Length: 298
Image: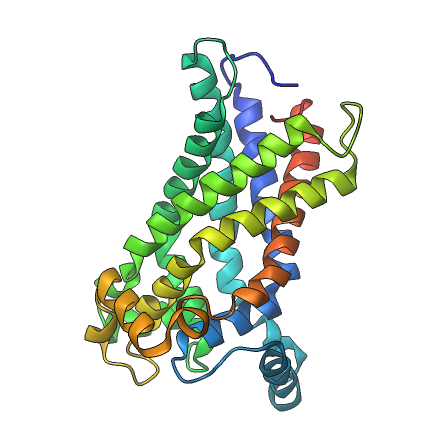
């Protein structure tokens, strides 16, 4: 099912960019309330996660501030996720094509598929990291009511360097997540174990995308918690030095909260929202990219 290696056209690059941006926007908007809840639990060292507590948080938010507050910070998410997803999918296609062209048989091996996803995640994260910090701040602090106000406040009180706090675990985490998820999705698509033919049905794509996201997040999740603490350190009564480096943050969380209630806090929620977002994202990208470019990506 794999294409023969060839140079990518401008039309294909634009198609990847537009399709990736749309896929990211649709997926993130769908799971925005759960994403906000996850961030709130991740950054708190005192609040234990459970589905019941998550439900209480969502209900109290609706009762006290209205249903629209469940999407608080989603504007910042869109500002970040649109370029992030666009760059991720576009660069993944670029790296896959490059590795196909340098491979001895013109195909994409599992190692190359993993490397393409990892490099795509690194490229996108490094390009949009400051927007990720703004999104995390807006999700947990009511004072941050707009993107520009949040940016102005952070720069005034903490400096430019605060926009890059947590970048080390982020880059490490996205390289693992991107490599794993793109590897799993691409491998399952090519093998298509749910069908005796080459036909990929919508439910196949959704399931493969969900499994890809599940595998990726299970491996990289502790780094996600670590970066959240580093990104939001100092605004919830925490001293900045407690979360000043990746190693210090990881060891502090593990020592005080352990694995389940610390480094893996909220993972069960991710088992719900992660596969949903991943399945939607991969599926929307596949169909939209095929529609615009005229051929499917493998």
